[in-house]
Length: 166
Image (cartoon, rainbow, N blue to C red):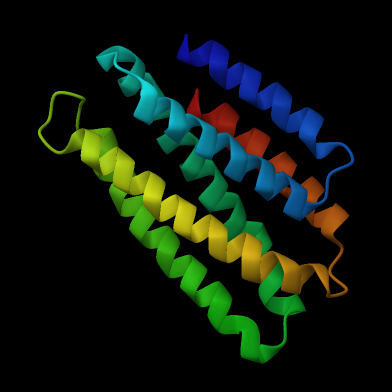
């Protein structure tokens, strides 16, 4: 079942890439993860929660990697030197998210704090998304960065990484 969902995500990624710029693609990722976190919170099934947690972790790993490899360097270059601290903070937040993802992946739904860790991960992500969408994205959009080309690079790399997760 997880493989089928991963395939579905890959198809959505390819469709999303056509015509979307980098910011639209990243916002779509944010929305997808937020939806999975909400499903996790509402679910009463241990197996469903476990599946959702794995999907959330996989999506965040790919999302963080494409941002760090492609979007953040492009954003840093496009933004004035005095806005570089926004990218620095985003990268530090990614480190915290990555550590929590690793902990969740090592654990299981029966562990004492596992469910709380997934919920806190959702809170970290919401905070990070708020900063990206409220501060970084609007500033990058005002630059001369070729968001369409960056979006194509993001989509291609995302599809590669999702293929490697299988």
